[in-house]
Structures are given as C-alpha cells and as structure tokens.
Image 1 (cartoon, rainbow, N blue to C red):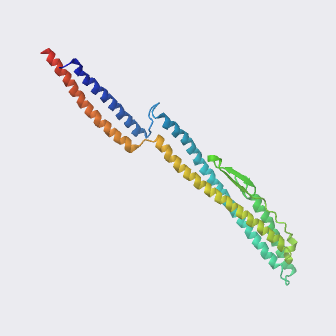
Image 2 (cartoon, rainbow, N blue to C red; image 1 turned 90 degrees about the vertical axis):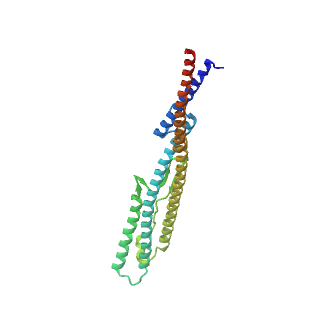
Length: 260
C-alpha cells in the first residue's frame, strides 16, 4: 500500500545531507585553521588541557634561555679562573727563581716587581669578573624556570696571603702551594656548576620536546585523519544529493498518481 508517509524518505535524506554538509564544513575549517577546536564547545576538554600545557611549554622555552645564559656566565668565569691558575704557576716559577744564589740585586728587584704585579692582577681579575653586573666570585643562584630548577655556584674571592718580599729568596713555598689548592678547588666548583647547567638544559630540552608533541596532539588538527573525514563527507554529501533527487522524484510520482 502506498502511503503519503512514503514522502518521509525525502526528509530523512535531507536530514542526512544536512548532517554530512556540516561535517564537511567542520573538516574544511579544521584543515584551513590547523586547529582541532573551531567553535565554542568543540572538544573543550582537550582544548583546556592543551592551552594549560602550552603555558608550561612557554615556561620551558624561557627556562632553556636562562640555562644557556648560565652556561655563558660560567664559561666567562672558567676563563678568568684559567688566568688565575696561570698566575699561580708563574708565582711558582718566580719563587723558584728566587732560590738562585747567584741572583744580583737587580735580579731580585725584577722578581719582586713581577711578583707584585701578578698579585695585583690576581685581585683585579676577581673583582672585574662579572656577568651583567653580578660578580662571579660570589654565591650566584639562577632560577631557570620549569619546576623551580635552580643553578647554584658559590665561589669565594681567593685571597693570596703571599708576602711579595719573600719571592726573591724562594721563601714562600707553602703560601703559593696553598693558593694553588684554592684555585684548583674553585676550578672544580665552576666545572661542577657548568655540568649542572648542561644537564639542566638537556632535561629541559627533553621536556620541551615532549610538551610540544603533547600540545600538538591536543590542539593541532590531525591533517591525515581530517583529510580522510573530509573526503568521506564529500562522498556522502554527493550521494545524499543524488538520493534527495530520487526521494523528490518519488514524491512527484505520488502527486502524478493523485492527479490522474
């Protein structure tokens, strides 16, 4: 039996066609914007988590910049420590020169003059060793951002305690040896701080890569998957248009039956 309700196929096909058209529109918007969420209420949970992690990612990027600055400061400090080490080596040489019993008065004066200059320069290098106004021969704590990571290096100003007048007769071996121990200890401390900064950068770089992937998975569109959905929606939309025409023709057939 033919019923007027047979025309309901037209409305069902039209409804399916509208739904497919909406899906095609969403896929096109996602692909054109590069974002998963294209409207309020669209995948809100993923979007909220993604934006929260995006803030964390921004913090990580700045943390890496801070850690890199710490490395540059420590390289400057290490260079100054090498200068101090060279000075201590030269003081040892001068002390050995003072052991020569054949030194003339002029020789002794030359040894004293160079020793005095070295000790003055030793103090000056430490005073002028700074990074952006902060003296590096002091306690320095730098926060690098993520998870409250702090880089610390604590170097005290090295006092030499050498009597310059003793250099001309080789009489200050113990003081020079003690000074060498202090410089070596500071070099080791600076090296440990440098390694800590490098390790922190490696850790932050790994976190940054992981966060970037996670943020992308929650906010960025899946181009391969969305392209497939677009193609599927377009095929269904074309099929729906064809079926809508047939449903309309079915209704026209019923009308022709009535008119006859």
